[in-house]
Each structure stands twice: as C-alpha cells, then as structure tokens.
Image (cartoon, rainbow, N blue to C red; front, top):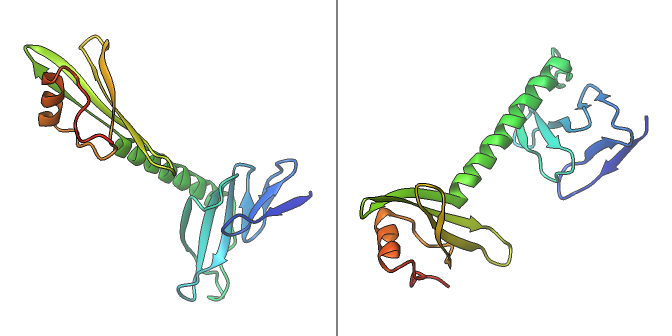
Length: 174
C-alpha cells in the first residue's frame, strides 16, 4: 500500500492512492476520515485529531486515553475509530446548522390580514459579504427581493417598515 503525505496549514493528512483502510496504533483511516493520535502540546497527555479528507484543519480534536504504561497512548481500534467518526460527523453537522442559522433568518408578520414571510439571507465572502431581503406570501409566491447590508437587523419592526414602504430598499444598505 502506497501512502502519500500532504501538508496543508496543519498536521499531515494521510491518504492512500487506492483508498485502502489505514489501521495503525496512532493512525487510522477509511478513505474519508483519518484519526491521528498526537502528543498534546498543553500537557503530558495525548489527543486525537479527526480529519475529513481534503480539509486542512481537523474537524474535531479531543483528549485521548493513555495506555497501560501511562506514557504512551492507547492504540486506535475499530470501535474507537467508529465512535470518533460518528462524533466528528455530528460535530460537523451541528457546526453547519449553526452557520446556516446565523446566515439565514426569517420571520412571519401579518399585514392587513395577510401573512408575509420575510427572509434575510447572508452570503459570506472574503471580499465582503452580501445580503438579500425577500418576502413571500402564504403560498410561497415571492413579493419582493432587494439587496441589503449584511448588518441589516431583521426584526418585526424592520419587516413592517419594509412592507409599508412598498418593499423599497431599506436605507441602511451599502
């Protein structure tokens, strides 16, 4: 089995050319996830870093159990690796959900007896984030869409003001 080491802004990521599983005492991988047991820089213990293939930073880093000699780490095994993969996947999923919630907000207001759903969607970008404010009726029909500042505060009051203006672009946009 030929292993290829890649260095990307962090610890080495181990991959195999033919995606064969890696099963070593301090390194375990399945082609998608790689677990690496490393010396904990903060103390005398050990840590395990879970890398998703292609990512430069670990998805999860946590403490790792000492072996019987109290000096070396406990070797990785199938059960431990499966638990680490499950935990790392859950952590990534929750992080994605949190980011989505931060970037996409919505609320529903009632105006003249009609319910209107107002959405604020922010698109992050290294050169500057953009944001869109939109409104839909009860049937999902889009009533309006305008660009706003990513700093726009979506509230019941700001939604009512936007609707009352005839969906004109709010003043605090860039």
